[in-house]
Image (tube, rainbow, N blue to C red):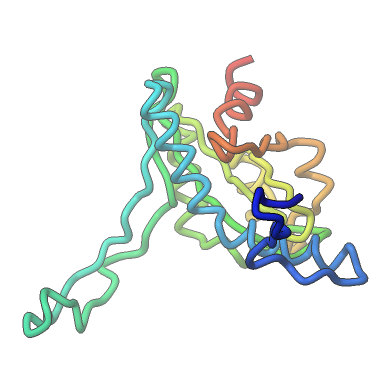
Length: 197
């Protein structure tokens, strides 16, 4: 393509072509995984603006010890007040939702070491109280994101023996989350499919 002045159009910041298609896919997938939280936050804003759901990121509780006011109010010393439970909670279709979002670079399984016991206990309590509890797991190298009911994760966590949940479990028991421009992650569709049908 040429501009009216005859100069050729130049793409800035173009990704350098490599001989391997896999290399480009890996770079793209790695960037996807790093932005999982941003994608969920953006999707939550989309759902909120349209009155579909009210889901927020739970802040990590910290206790501030020292603040430096010489260059504005800058925290210089703080510590975690207590262990955080899960990443997100909110309300959808009159039901309480609570979920954790995690990434994995494994193609074959999700490592259980990414989950702590207090998160498992918290999600078990949510289920016992009639809430909806799940995990959103991003398989970075596959560029696939699944919603999996927390009961499956709790079962694998409690069972012992295995140190991971096989990818096949996500394919069979989970719901693949559709990715798009807006919302970035259509995870409410996955919630509908898993809990409201």
